[in-house]
Picture 1 (cartoon, one colour):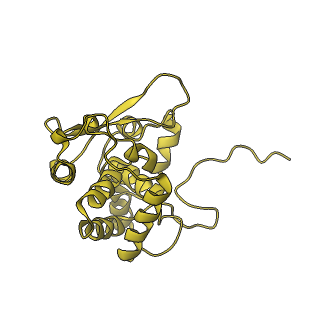
Picture 2: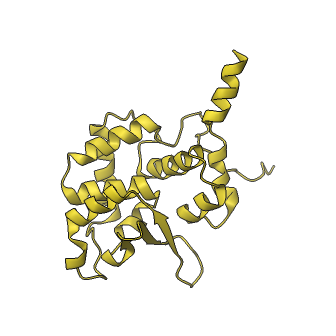
Length: 194
């Protein structure tokens, strides 16, 4: 018997969330600030762009536009032969931290900034999450940071189509999972009930 398509969700089958909440995201950034400048820059890149860890590791100085305030991220999950690059706006303070860590104008524009494997970067992020006292669970991963970005953007009123573009989703249906979470408007409406 076919059970039908499995729809993406922000929770596992047993009800555990897959995203870091706002307090956990803030503690993660605080813990990352205590690391070396390149590690801190990697962590901020993951938090403020919602990119996949492999996409962050592929970034070169050419992808950082400090004047315009964005990072150009090559979508590595696209199946087509064409190169797809998305521009994600980021805080100027974050770009300044990346520049302090790498002196972007002094680097070869095509050299990767972070010369580590995906496995090493993944373990590094997990270690920083432990330092930030983020409780174990499916949210305690680099993908948890990606989900946190999408959810935070929606809760801040960013239109769904922009979140889709920033995350590099091929389908808006994928992005729509972030509409599932309770937002401030719903909490306010519920507050009126009680």
